Length: 136
Image (cartoon, rainbow, N blue to C red; front, side, top):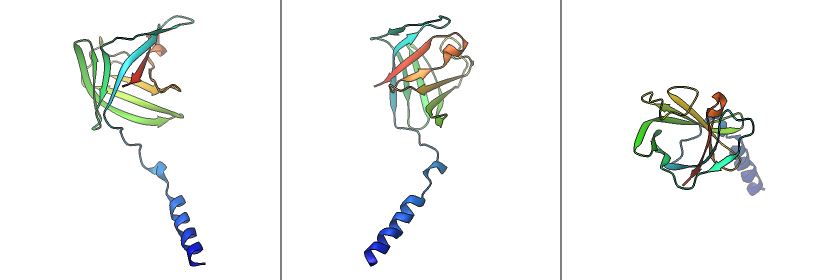
């Protein structure tokens, strides 16, 4: 009988925790490399694969990141969120270098994880290319 009471007491404590009160922690170091894209402004865009690219997002566990396209790079901070049933990444840039920022905004990019686990851009909302990145 004592074991049953102890088990029930432990079960109550275990199920009473509400983990939604705590923000999702920023994951460890991550590297995302472009895998492909769909052209923007096209009615039925096809997916174009990219196999060898120097287009990379390097995310650090301290909430900073570096975006590199060839020899050019830009950095800033990022935040991971879980919204509308999606895991989202918000990249905030230290400087507004519009050649390297692929977004409808000049200082921020928004990405989400699609059903294939790819980091997926939202630049297509303003007729830019929809970019897809694979985690390395």
